[in-house]
Length: 332
Ligand SMILES: [Zn+2]
Ligand SMILES: [Zn+2]
Image (cartoon, rainbow, N blue to C red; front, top):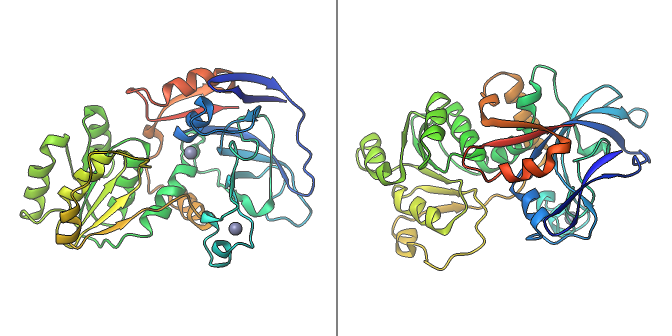
């Protein structure tokens, strides 16, 4: 079968490798796969992996073979939870398998989903109804992580939230908050991303230098109850801490790996802020996302800007960080 492998840092190969044996698990043919920043980091070597490694962890596919009596059967359309957990470490036993000490991710610790066939345990496979379009289905994995993140925050209808960064996750965060009855302000430099958020969920949008005044107007100067950081820079986290109202919450969704400017530490204390740093997702979070998408309550298609063939993987990787792109999908 065809598979997209990384064979050395920044070296991709469309390889021909054997179809995996189902071996008591579910054999799936991926239909739509998503490319995300993690894949790019594995590709460039920023996240080291043993080579060669089949890339990818976001997929929707069709079941080819399943154990008798399994919850899915051949022909079913499914999403695969790409994370594995050991089941026996302290965090798994505390009901937090997404933080497992022996965790693995497809496309990183084990071979991934940019291939014509993929094997996954029955417990990792969730049914996806036909009412979700092929394009929208490519966002279900990211949607699950956004839902996992929003489960931690306490917002109520009528409250005000700001979302800094209107990339794939930021756009989804805006829509999920709007679904919760929250007044949402989307913040980014990119005009077309602001327009997209305004069409689907945001009550107002602002360029970063307008954010203070737009939020002050909507909150009588108090500041928003919640700010979601969906970029992943120290500067935007500092901005989130600056913007949020006293007693508010900051959801840190962008993955920060460092910074040397420092944060507004006194404000963390003075405002008695609560910060959340959610990671990954639980199978139940994906199920919630699938239900929301199937009910037609989210507008996911416009968040997909590029759909390519698996053979164009190199191009897809280039597009992920392009200013013209939001979600980049490949059809297998
Ligand atoms: Zn991803
Ligand atoms: Zn574990």
